[in-house]
Image (tube, rainbow, N blue to C red):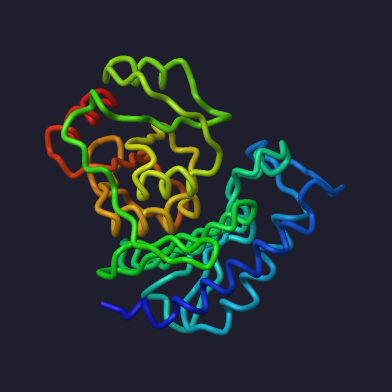
Length: 266
C-alpha cells in the first residue's frame, strides 16, 4: 500500500489554489461551451484544471482529469483523479454548490480525497486509515456518519439537476420522506460524511470517475459505505473513465439498511 498521507498537505493547498481561481470567474463573464456529451464546460473549469495538472505533474503518479483525460506518469500504480469544477451547472447558476476535487486511486481503491467548496470555504479531506476531517473558519474537526439503523430516519440528498421520476419512485419505495436537493456529488458525499444526510445515489453511467474518487475516500473514512447499484465495490474503469454501474453513498454500515437500498435500486 502506498503512503497517501505524504501528499495530503500539498493537495489541500492545491485545491484551495484552484478554488480561488474559480472564484475569480464566479458571477463574472466567461465562456460556456458544450462538450460531446452536451454537458457545459467554462473558462473556470479549464483554468482550475490547468493549475491542478501543472502541480500534480511534478509527482510520480499519472493523472486522470475530466477535461484532459489520462496523462501517463513515471509510476502508474496510482493515478490522481481530478475534477477541476464539480458542479459546473451550479457554478453557472450561481447556487454556490460546486467544488474542486482531487483523489488518489491505487489498485482500484481511493486512498486519498480532498474536496474544497470555495463559496463556503469548506475543505474536506481523508487518507486511508486516518479518518475524515473538515476544516472551516480556522477549525479542524473529525467527521463521522450518522450510522442510523433504520431508513425511517434517513435523509436523502438528490441531484438538483438530475432528479428523475425513477429516482423519486426509488425514494418513495424506500419510505424516505426527507429529501434535500443539492449540486456537486462531492458536496453530497461530504455532507453525508459529516452527518448532515444519510443517502445519495446515481443509477446511470453518466458519472465520471473524477466525480466519485475523492469524495469516496472521505465518506468511507467517515464510516460510510460506498457501493455500485448492484451492491458491489464501485469499479473505477480507467479506460472508459465512467462509473458504469452507478454509485451509492450510504451514511450507515448497518447491513439490513444497505440491503434495502440496493434491493430498491435493483
